[in-house]
Structures are given as structure tokens and as C-alpha cells.
Image 1 (cartoon, helix red, strand yellow):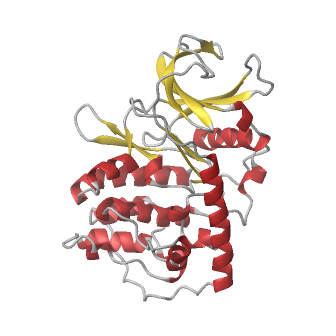
Image 2: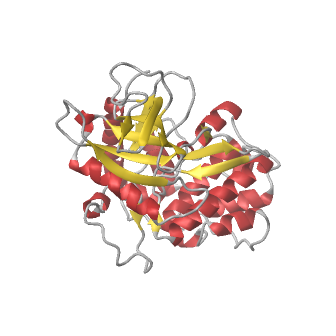
Image 3: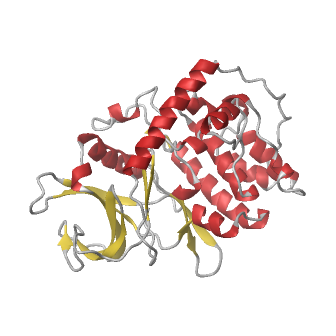
Length: 361
């Protein structure tokens, strides 16, 4: 997503997620400073560029606010990619929450010498750092530092689920931390590019002419190291899937590492679907039992044993909810080895494809 800094250009793409870091403007940039596009966005400067697209800081002269404009490289434009832009916009419109990135509109640019219309997304400008960058700098967060961030993320996730939207790609790189004037940070959940509508009465009559084919079953969408067991088994993602992934993020925030990490990706996939996670207190002695119980409940392999809503997670950490008795390990049905191997092959091919798309720094 968007970040204003002077670091070298870098693009990281994972299953449809684009992360762009700032770079100086170059002559071949699609848009030039001072140019006005879509009759309202005055380009200020390029703040990120990679193999899939560019991100610009711009000023919305109609609304009097600073925005970020995300474009796609013309050679990458396809009907499916354009549809994903519109899907992210349509899903985000349902969620009005201070901890969810605002997307203002999606439009298509006509550029001289370019045969295709280039999709462009206008969104809230975020001036801060990602949770991933914070963890890379500080290794891990204390319980006191993590609690307000976790509760804001839980509130954002609850609002998304309440609007009938499943994120499906929650990870530290998709959470922005913006410093507040009076201290603390505002956490913002971003990147609904692989989100889908939940099977909920709230949205059962919604129309998605442009996007119905983008969320087909038996397709891996998301980031493998932040996937729930049911995603690795190619089951349909739902709100319980987001709860599990949220548990992985909290685990990483508190311990500085993910559970289930093994020497190889195949071993990691096996562990995720067949084993229980190591309790975080093994890595952080003296961890508050409420944090341990909350994280372990999020990471139940059986979706029915997880929290039923994201809002319950913050309440549990604050001691406002009764924790259920821990389940016996290994109760979730074992997955056939051949099926896990098949999933691993798909994940490996996805990783190779991502590596091919990544632009070296």
C-alpha cells in the first residue's frame, strides 16, 4: 500500500497483494507532477513503483484532501485485474469504519500511446508504517503496546464481517500504523483485493456482475504463511477463517515469530493442518494467561471452537469474556497426505509465480 518515505523502490506481491515503498520520480512514470487526472486529482509525486503498478500522492481539488492513487502497469492490465479493482472498491463501500482503509472511487485512465484503459484507484492517503515494518524494527510488541492495536484491528474486522465481507488475506503487511498527534497509533486494515462477500443474509441479494468469477471455490487466495487450515484444504473461507488468521498475526506480534515454522514449506503446511501450535508462553515466559488463552482459541483447528466474532477477541484480552475450556489436541479430522501434497504443489507454483513478478530492488 502507500507510504511516504525516501527508501529505495521495492515491490512485494503475494497472491494479489501489492506492497509498494517510496521511490524518487523517474522520467518513464505514467503520471507527472502537476498533471490533473480525472478532472480532479492533481499529481504531487510518485511514492511507489513496481512491476505491477505505481502509487502517487495527489490532491483531490474537488474535496480538498490528499489522496493516494494506485495504477496498474499497462502491460499488466487484464479484464480480471480490472474486475478485482472494482471488487475491492465495491466491498470497501460497505464498510464505514475509522480502522478500515477508505477507497473513494475507481476509474479508468486513457493515456496517449497506450492502447488499453488503465484502472486507477483513489484512496485514503496513509502516512505511517505497516505492522510488518514495526515488527521488523522492534522484533515484537509488549502486551501493553499490542493491546490497542489488536483491539482496533478486531473492531475493523468485526465491521467488515458485519458488512458481510471476509478479508481472506489478513497479515502484518496489510495493517498500517499511523501516529496520532496525542500519542499512540491508529491501526488501519488495508487491501481487500482478495476479499469476498460472506454467505450472510446481509449481502445475499448483492449484485456482483463484474466479480462473481473471482471468488470461485478450490482456488488458493491469500498468503500461504497466514492461511487457516481450511484454506490450505481448499475449503471456502468464512469469518472463522479471518479469526484464525488474526490469531496468527497476534501470535507474531507478541512472540516475534509465527507458529508452525518448519525447515521447508511442505513441513510447514503439514504442521498447520495436523498439529496444534506451540503455546506462545513457551516463547515469551510470563505471558499473561489471558493472551495465551485468547491466541490459542483463535488458532483452534476446528473453526467451530474459535471466537464467533472478532469483537470477542478484544473483550477476552481485557478480561471481559469467559474463556471456554481448552479442547483436547488432535480432535480435528486428519487430512489425507495426498491432499496436503497437492495443496503444497499449488502453493509452490504460486510462490514461483510471485517470484517471477517481483521486481528486484
